[in-house]
Image (cartoon, rainbow, N blue to C red; front, side, top):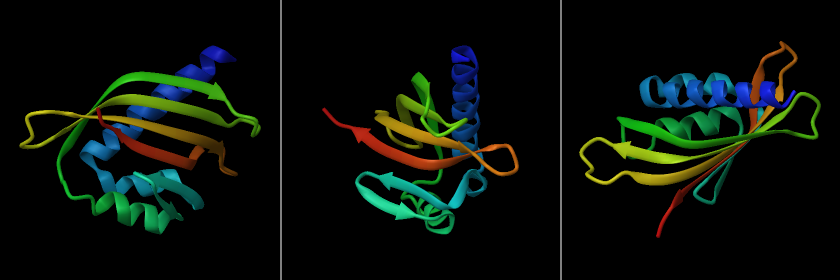
Length: 125
């Protein structure tokens, strides 16, 4: 069970950041109408507003480099909590930005996982 949770968490993270870096508009497919994103303290509810936020960030091209992925089963049946740390490399910037991100993945009625909760923070200092 633990290996499966780790494997699913790792696969999700790879998929998420691949989409973010290469086809950001497709991230909307990973959220639902009741999903919530906290982005640098700003709370955003619903797939449309989350998609709008992610697609209108002040940079177009970026590359996420993941350092760590920690996954645990959640108390929601079939759910997984995933915590990620890494670096965000922006085009034209010499120094990457360190970030942390947490995802709470929940099974959808169709059998796939969607992002119920997403918390993103840049790490300063």
